[in-house]
Amino acid sequence: MRSEKTLQTLTDIKRNVGLVRMFVQGMDYEDFAADVKTVYAVTRCLEIVSEASRRLPSDLKARHPHIPWNDVAGAGNVYRHDYEDILEPDLWDTIHLPLDSLETVVLEELARLTGRSD
Image (cartoon, rainbow, N blue to C red; front, side, top):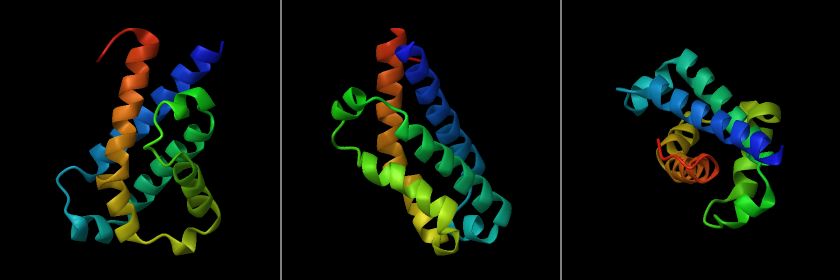
């Protein structure tokens, strides 16, 4: 059961990272910051990624100590409760820096669980 739950959680993270990439495809920062719908959509995806990261088992997180798991989980609190503090530059930086590392880990762990590398 645990591996099924972990598989679903990793799939949720992968899906939302993919949505973020799709939403900002072809945009530069100025386009992104000016597009309220995209900012909201990206914020929601990052909120889901944050919440899903809380559901990952500790042994998985321990295999990837380079990921700041507490920061990933804590970001959701900002998105939900301190939304007025969310700045477009912070979202843009998250999309282009930490999200890459997290996506790599998610793909590795999905391959580990499924025996596939797609």
